[in-house]
Image (tube, rainbow, N blue to C red):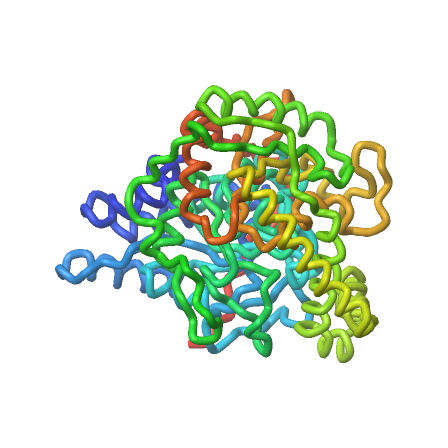
Length: 486
């Protein structure tokens, strides 16, 4: 990687502001890195270099004009392919939308562009973002920069691979049941699932949806804070507004772990199987918290209601969002999506009422837990990156699963709580595969969570280790230049 490709987003934006690096030079480095590594990992699936060049040149004119510069001024960025970018092919990894070119940006894209981002294309996703392994029938499989025959995770797997490999330092993903956290753990980067409404992106037709969150992924916690400063804030569609805005993420991240009450839970009290190598890395890193002055105990909130809350809410959301597509194009939709939609259609009023009661009990359990503990620490993923040819792991540590969600339960359980969660690199196995924690705090303590994460990051510096991607180690797939509306 060259010097620009190694920069954090914070450093690169600052260099552009100081005119040490131009937005055009940043874009050239970004496109060069895609050319170098993307054939091995298939992270970026659509490119629009002409549009990106025009935007970069406009950014450079603004730099010298004396105008006020936005917080992400000149930063090149591909976007998750489940997010619509006006004029750029946006497929959601589905054959139904293989040639779809939206005319309007999704809310998160509009915010990023107002913040100064130079949009360059799209990163790969599983079909409709369903599942934590990134493959689809339109673009194929995204693989892991640390081992390009293994999974990069998902659904923000294309983004995770792009960030880890130096294509870009920062980007936006989304997370229903671990779609930021699992790929962050697999690829050794940081993923952040904010509290509800902090980045308000409700789906069409449901302003009250709460399970899926939009959030950033980066190599460093400070870049996550920069992203939140740039895009967090209220939307007229989400009421009442969240009590956290972009201004809460300004200033230096001066984290301090002294006196922080940390609960370590290897299985979230649910008996979840976790691969021994994952636990070995994470348990070895608990001493980092202790040496920094934290009080670490093995404990967990009562999450017995979490699975009912997650599965019921997920099924309802899938039926609402994708039900019409499944009815019309069932043969073009992968079976996991069809199964989730059908689960939503099959829910009875009794089951929906029961899930409401379960969510109420879960909230009470979390209030009791956070009266005693400040921070919950648990595995971000139950498994190491697995063979990318699989659809999903059939078993975890010898325990057979019953479906494609079972190997993701450590992430799904925390999604059900609604808490903000930060996936953070913790270390590497003996064979060099990344392993990550997920850290969670009470509702709307998002900025505090980033400070605590930064304090851990400063003591481990996992960010300083980067993958070496060699030709011939992965699949050779080139990004497709978009058919754009001009």
